[in-house]
Amino acid sequence: MVDRGFRQPRYDEPLVFDLGRDGRRGFSFPDFTEAGSEEIPARIRRQDLRLPQLSEIEVVRHFTRLSQMNWGIDTGPYPLGSCTMKYNPRLNEEIASLDQVQMVHLLQECEELQGALELIYRLERALASLTGMHRFTLQPAAGAQGELTGCLIMRKYFKELGEERREVIVPDTAHGTNPASAAMAGFTVVEVPTGQDGCIDVEALKGAVSAERTAGIMMTNPNTLGIFEKDVLEIAGIVHDAGGLLYYDGANLQGIVGRARPGDMGFDLVHLNLHKTFSTPHGGGGPGSGPVGVKEPLEGFLPVPLVSEEEGKYRLFWEMPKSIGKVRGWYGAFPVLVRAYCYILTMGGAGLRLASGIAVLNANYFLKMVEGIRGFEMPFKGPLRKHEVVLSAQQLLEETGVTATDVSKALLDRGLHPPTIYFPQVVREAMMFEFTETETRESIDKYVDALREISALAYSNPQVLKRAPENTSVGRLDEVWANHPKTMTLSHRMCPGKGDQGAA
Ligand SMILES: *Cc1c(COP(=O)(O)O)cnc(C)c1O
Image (cartoon, rainbow, N blue to C red; front, side, top):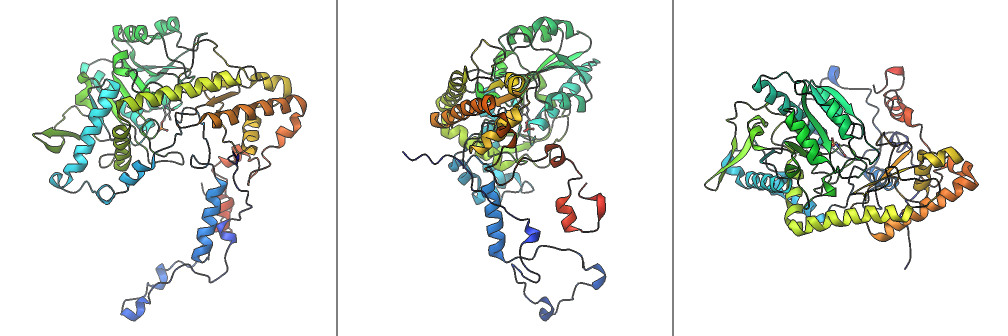
């Protein structure tokens, strides 16, 4: 078999502003003046647009080359832990791009939207049965927005009860969005540490829970170390006994879908990331979908409207006086809902169960294969992992000076997209791999071989790794500068002379 690897072509692609020639155009408008229409008055005509001037084929080639300089799930594995970057079946795309989906508009009358409303209703039922929840809102546009929605529901719930509960407990392994969402909803965040076994330290939790102040706990299970919180039932008892609620961050549902349900573990609210577990391409900013499900006592607080059904007719149900209101325009990212529904139907219960099983198998296969590679350790030894594995390159750093960043750049040189690094923050030099069920054994083996080779290099010639990546179109970026709002190479070119105001 020919092994072509996953290497990307290497281009030295200029900016679009440096391509083309003055006066070149990729379009031709009809002459409006001939048709008798007025010319645009000179005083509102822009003179300084400085748009790139290219023919159509130059534009196509430029963007095609840029797309080939990029990494994507269609060209190679993308084991970005916690992100569940799995392959999304083309069938879902095809259905989501049907006119009946794309042309739907929620200003249409409900009678004209029966198909769309039925799909929303059925997807809600499917998610409820997969999670053990009573009802779902499909409005939130992302996981983080789902969390905020959940926190606002918790706040309103305690307000109705007349209780002043202002604290939300968040474990130190949590995704950064958890404390941020709780804080945005007006709560004070109380952090609890992780114990020796990679699970929440239950004794510390007992100390943090208060029957007066605790509104609830936000948990991810399996947590971001890929470990199933074995004490979840005890934790649920502790928080419920104090009158608090349990919020489940379901972005990691991939590890248990079809096998265990947050509702059965005692959670009162959950959000899911349809763009992770339920098959929508993501990265680069969306669109996403973060539905929120609740147990029956919280139903009335969900955002309006819900979709209700009566004698086979579907309608938007607004009569919810305790609702927290709307959290997004219209009804959610409808094509994402369509993909999720399609995915669930085509997989079926047995298929979803098999998928989570293979995802967990892939993670643990990788774990076994990297065991003993010098410099990489697995923190929190012991239990098998669920869908993801966190390694630490701390020993490698101490013994060779090579960091998790250097290892990631060296993976890029070998045509492999790196894992998530430096998260979760409880692991030093963290490298978090999630292969998902759609990766083959050969793909995983490529990572194992690459890590072994990189480790050997680190101990023999670490300087080479400091220069990586050398086989990519773009070398090592200044990551701080790349994220800085004053990074204005582009805006400088667009508006020369605008000085330091830049794109910020
Ligand atoms: C991705 C993720 C989130 C946030 O989801 P977004 O859709 O990116 O807002 C929250 N928690 C965990 C564990 C995640 O992996």
